[in-house]
Length: 588
Image (cartoon, rainbow, N blue to C red):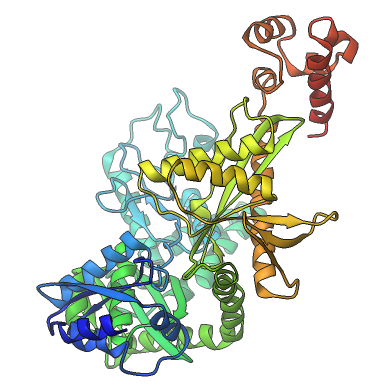
């Protein structure tokens, strides 16, 4: 603490970013400040609660980077958090990939559902996004029945069924005037921007024609289309007199937690909403700026962002390069209040669940670290192996970050046919994983868990030592009922209380890695060809494999043979291994 006290005296009052470090030198928190001296000192000269208290108790050192402006410090903060992935920083979730409705940029355009990876400079005409994929599909279906856009992906030489039922103009055979297509595009564009009158008229006319022709079934279908527009689409419309793309952001704070709500307005409608709830570790104004900047680091920036009180509009406009306003009255103020009400409802309704989830994930993760002596345990990588009679051997790795599964980090490994037992399988997968971690400078875990006992622990440690990596490894010791009873490393056992959050966390990790690995194993087996089956049978080399492929060609033919039939082509032990595998293979 004396070291920190001395460094605090030397701090500047300029803007910048600060990096808090634990006793091992690992960055555990990144923040930004308008005044570095005041902000960093505040961690050490006042009382804290919750996650902020846990953070401060683990700070052994800090460093800082001075910036030219507060905007620069805000942008630097985002990049530093991405670089270090600190334990106590909130990493916002990626926005879901919502569908858009697209009018394609083709000579004869199509109207379809699209999920573009990048919106900027996209060639087609996009509308959305739509949070309800069903509603998007239903809308496209409705419009495609009313407007005869091209339906086929690649045009045939002759007209198809869609032409004969009036849902296509027969672009493959007929010459279509450009104005006809242009008018269709304009009307559909107007509809998708919230102007439904023209389409209503068209559907009403079709409904009347169907009734006059006594086609009552078709008339009912058109009636249902009108009801869909009135009930599903019209009710989403907000009374704003423009089609500007807007987001509305507000928040609610309770008991050291903050809830954010983002309402997305597209073409005068609330198309979807996003929300985040997390512990309030930093000052409120810093958290508000971080949330908005980080959110738009991952999501499309609209033409205008409406925010509640206490957001720094001037700072945010410079950071995300769009207009940021705090509405004071009118419909925009009502929408801001709606976002606040949603943020409050989410936090208050789910507060107990949030606290319980925090205890069983982050809290259990902290207690696991205390149990095995790892300060600031954050990332756990867990391995499991699966095979069938020594064949089709695979491994799976799952990652838990702060007690929660991090599925984008999961990895699958198909094990080399030379690794026939758990010891060598574990060695192969550990080597492949951490050789890559070293050479690609990937994030190293704080703890490795192997789903096995001391043999698997020793196998993993032997490989890690050869790579000069000092990462703790523990195994999951089981009793004769295959129930985990303790953690084990090379020096000791850690008894587990079956009623504790730590035990339940380890159970979730064990179940997840087993599920993931077995799922991959089944997938490999289900896709197995005769060639890949033979690759996994001990004693079948390239020559025997070639002869068997030539003679039997398929798994089906091979499965019809008895063990005695196989022994005509193979040694008894090899024939037995292959026969046992094929016998089990029938059960898939």
